[in-house]
Length: 378
Ligand code: 13P
Ligand code: SF4
Image 1 (cartoon, rainbow, N blue to C red):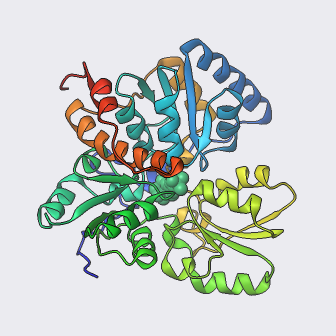
Image 2: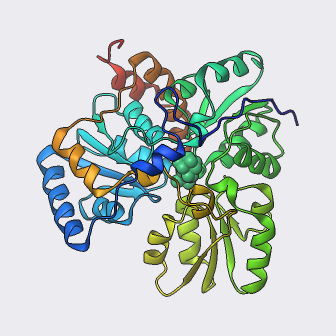
């Protein structure tokens, strides 16, 4: 398998070019409101969502209050595949995306006529930051014989260069499908997810060397010790984790698949290797079961020790209410980039729908034409 040399990105350095470093992200994580404030903020957000005709689409890693609010108001809390689908299919003309920037951009690309707002536009992702569009384009140019498959955790400009976008819940199936067609793949940006897919499918993957700074911190050696102390526990692992952690898993999958496993597996105790925001939903889905966070390294007060994404943590009730009051923090994707990026996302959604219906996958060109009619160049 070939690999490439990619420039490292220092996430704890002062932010450059508008991207929010982990240090400045932590500094902007909103304080937890008191019990009374929470109730008042939730009521205010409910009224504003109604007034704006907006729907809240949240990821499982954000604040538990936002997750609950999304469900209580007819929105959704889910993994990045379902978030994309839900926002596209919902009748609301305003989508409020509580998550990170690539999720807001994906919603905007799929629904170019809708208004997409986010509580904090600087909530980003180390995978996205670690894969600048120009460097990625040069990487693709150097390997024109390969089908370009990118993870959802990338900018709109990177997606615009891709043949396929995948999320963690469907990446394995898409790559297996391409491998069966004899295609060689250029994969970006997560080397751990790419490595997992490569090992599982045997596909020829040329990989960008990015990683998620949260999952990268899970440690196989410590996990082995924890497993020995809890021999009955099943280990649930997100595939952004290193190979040594994945090797110890009883189940590897996306956030939604991990929740389903916690609910359905015949065990009372689980060790969970992903952002600890997921435990809120896991506890609701599997009441009475016990969940232990997988071990990470270090004790400093950063994401390196707490298994929580600093950018996901930037979403809170206060900045949600603020964005609903002001209608600012709007996601903008220029029309040309949006159309190019749309194709690789729609291809994945068509593949997912076909897989569910058990038919041959293919893009929905009629929908693409209808959707982009009237969307002019930026
Ligand atoms: P999922 O698609 O599994 O929700 O993952 C998104 C993500 O950013 C994980 O770190
Ligand atoms: Fe990105 Fe990791 Fe945060 Fe997910 S948890 S948004 S992959 S930095």
